[in-house]
Amino acid sequence: MHAYPPSRPSPTCPRHPAGLRPLANCAISIALAGLGFWGLPSCDHGSAAPLAAPGSPEQQVGELIEAFSPLDRTVTSDISDAKFIHGQKVQAELSKAGPAVGHAALMALQLKTEKPVDVERALLTVAAHADPLETVPLLESLLTQYGASLSLRTEGTLLLAEVAPARALELLEPLVTKQKQSSTMPDQEFLVKAWVIACDKTGRSPVPELCDVATNLFQPGYARVLAVRELGKRPDPRGEAALRTILVESTGDGYLRRITVQSLHALLPRETACELLHEVAAKEADLNFLRFLADAIEKWCG
Image (cartoon, rainbow, N blue to C red):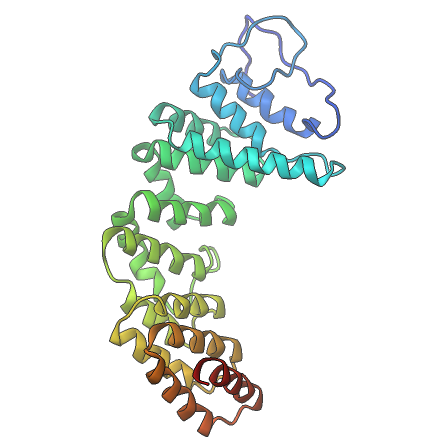
């Protein structure tokens, strides 16, 4: 338990109307108050003024925490929708607010208090965008080290690709094409997504690694689907060859093959795509996939 400033009474939780601020969130307010985050809505009934000045980084971070703290389950959908929209707006604004706010968000995130997962992700997002220099070491550790929740580690991986793409490429390269991923790592599909983000931001082609993921039978299905979708957006002979290989793959993964047809349709000239679909349909043994091919041919080839 953090010690409270001797000049202020220990805060106590007020009763709030249902739907405005659940009592469970008071623990967050108390913990932040103990370290000077008095910009949060007060948890005591005293008349003393908050230590954090209105509009200060600490107060803005307090508003972010409040915006992402869960509502009571009994509230109506219009209240929860309004809160969600407000939270996204606050997060977007604070992400551009500069290093002081980013530092305050990072300090709040690292407090030894239990926080809702949405609050953790919001604090990490603001810290990464507003103060990337100070936050990148934490993002790196979230990607590579076990300890934090998997949800926060996943968010950290994607944020690292956004704010420090060159560093993300260094860390992700040996992980993206690894056949058997550790269970303590973020899911492979998010590693692939982060890889694509970092490549796009640095101007590096992600196609070689996407081809490896897409054609690798040992990769998780969702990661392969994501790789196939991305290959359909990037004209490249290597990507086309990988998609052609998957199209005739006899693994029983009909969904992956359907996504492959859509990617090839987006990637290839109409005549080439139609010729390929006719060729595959003539040799297809899976009746369900053959029906899908017939529908695609009728729709796209006339």
